[in-house]
Image (tube, rainbow, N blue to C red):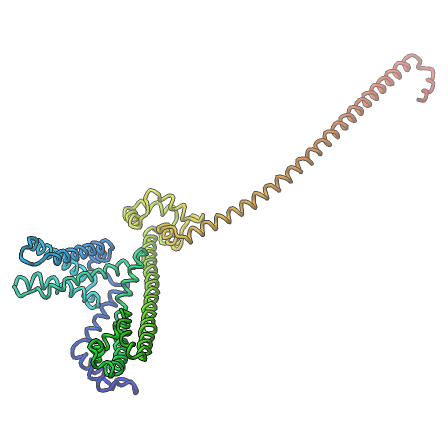
Length: 495
């Protein structure tokens, strides 16, 4: 391994110096590089999609919110017992000492079991996270080491026992577990801001010490070494040397009764007022406000990181649900056509395995027929996308955007119905006008029918009269022809 990372293997201009080479060789010799590689490889293996946990039930238990809640209650109870025990005087008259020892054994056992479950769930790499390693030290040093090793051996565990109060810091892990819940967002921002401000606080003290040191030298020279204050015990106690001046200036920087320090000195040397004003302007008005601005910016950055983490968590949860629903669809699709029919759905939902999956996904088995009617868009079949997205929307709670989308569609339907109603009114008006016209035509047709009837009657009477005259004429001709046959008949008179 050392040969692979030797300077000869690196390009020109990137070779480390002697100190870098020595540090790299020490890291390789100590095994730090090898351990770091193993930790990274193990984490990548566990993060891959092909990883199958050997104890999935333990992993699900440890990652569940009830488990974190129970351990949080245990930590709170342990902190309460520690405070109760510390409030009782240790003068030999404490009758509750035996009870405190039994309770301490119980809490040590509970925390040890918790640690073992977390190792079983997350693997040995769980120990190589800084927060988890500190949690491990709190459990073993203040619990197992003191309760089960040092006390039975009577080796004086009182000094280590004082650190048991640090177990309250384990509540930070509980806050990390609930940080994605909306109701705990503000609490997590405060805790995260407090823990992440450690580096800011460190550099803040460095800058404050530098500023105090510079001004302390000036204060010692201007005030303590002045002829007016060489015999002043109060001034010498406040500005006699650099350390005393730094402490006094720190008091002035906090604005804690700083006038009680400055005014007696200003009575003898009024010019010192400019020094105090300049120091307060730099240390209080500028430096402390800059520190506040940095901490506020850090809080905003934490808030943005938390929002991104929530978005990634929701995306992972959505992907997991989609995979589960897709797997359920493949179980329902018996012919493997990629589309689910009503017959396949009805047949598959009677299978116990499918019914158990639907119950796990929190769907009511008594509403399966309604489920199909909701998912089907009218073509009698469901694709993977329609099935998965539809079930996912039905599984979650109604969000504001879903309600707004529903209201939008309702408004569109209402507008369409209003337009349709106006069209129906128009058609009704046209039908009424047409009815009036048809009534007029019907009246005209009735009148025409009556005229035609009268014409028919007149024509019939005329035809009957003609037939009657023709018959009479024929009869007259027959009668006259029989009486005077030889004589010629006179011509018929003209009509």
